[in-house]
Image (cartoon, rainbow, N blue to C red; front, side):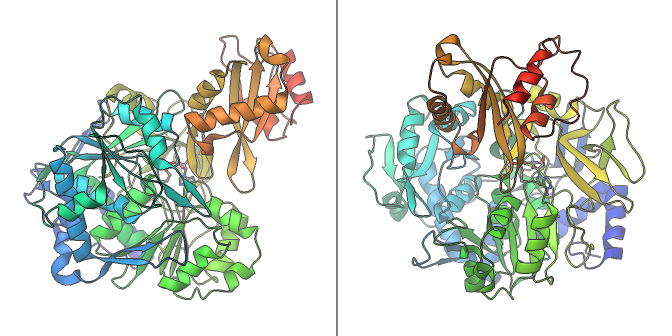
Length: 635
Ligand code: PRX
């Protein structure tokens, strides 16, 4: 029996039970029936959460691009693999067939080889959402180079940190990017970043906006002429199941960004299987995930998951508000999109606009709607359900993380009855647990706690690049023999999960993970600043926005405060990127601290959200008097 495509609730429970009773047998069957291998595995799974070490399909050999491209050529060669929809609706969409994708990936792979990139080398990809981005990702995978895609909204500083952390030898970028009516000088950002990256030998530059840019002799090369000259076929490198496929950086609550390492076989199997089921994907569908490939959602559900299923996947270069707020719906109508997967922040922004923008378009092709990245509030859920799905298309509220590689808790559409704000049931093979603060599992229903996962799943990140200890400390030390997600959750009477938000110092702004520490570090580098603390507060579009409490040095006291606010945000923009800018900045004379010197963020969070009714016990603070002062001057 094939468990590959679940069609009703009873079947879900059956398959789920099977998958957790004997995970090895379950995943072995999926791997065997739905993928092409160069060599079979010796062992399906070995694991030890103490080390922590997890290996899936050990001994197996494969190349993920043979699974995502080559094997489709005999049956789907002329089918559109990537449907590129440009930023400007007047520019024609590009349909890249599987055969064309094969040739483009092979050419790019040959260019990388010619530039000296070998299996195991790291390649940084800093590109806008143009076909070259997907092609570069796949070309790295083709030759066994480890791709590290950095979202092209990050600043030069953030880019440099990521390039150096994983010693990337080559960077792929473009002359610039379009963002609505604006253009962004990506090459300029790369040039600035590379001033501090001695390890980068080569920069390949795709032409997109045709701007005049500086090309450094020897180092920088226009991509197109190299592609034109490259051979259009390439023998895929044979990879071991546990060879790294990519590194993707995510924010931690402290310190440097964490380069999460995903490996080949397990990631492929799990993203393909979740894609098939969570979106009830069928052969003629047109799947559109609006994320950027710079985030895990794009890796798993624009590139690898869809292509492993031979799907047509839309790559959208633009933004939801350009040329107007109907852009998403215009694209759905134009390409007859069947599955639409986006983030709550986009839904909330569009829900503020006139309904005409939605109603003008024919959305009858839609069968499944998805949400990801942060909790979806009830109002946004209903707006999405009523106006986009017309109450016909189920909404899958998918909970997962960069670290998990694929969707972990989610309804299966037309299978799991949905409830607004609930991610509902664990996906096949996923064993969640809710833990209390004493490290005990909370059993039963109608309970809440910290969300952990008890058993390995194929697409979990295997380590943090260059820092396995941090991997262990962050995810495996809070609870014995469990992966700790950093999220809180509740389980209701029927066993449905609802994610309640982060329980650590990560703040999710517009669906982007931001760690407090790197932002505070950046603020503290401003010459007028002595100390700072940032917290999140509720925002009707972004979900959370950032509130900064800043202590100035004496030299800063006399400065114009609004100018200072601008300078501080400018500094954050340069060092991290515009997504980390503070919405509110309050200058304070002190921060509430415990006797051990730890900032009491709980109190700051309450003040920032305007909820000062129950601040809890402040008497144990080192400086309880500061609380009143901060409250009196709160913004
Ligand atoms: O807090 C959870 C939130 O996003 C975090 C993971 O962020 P990132 O690694 O950037 O990956 C986002 C895309 C997979 C989680 O720890 N999150 C993600 N999806 C949901 C969510 N919170 C609530 N509901 C969701 N559906």
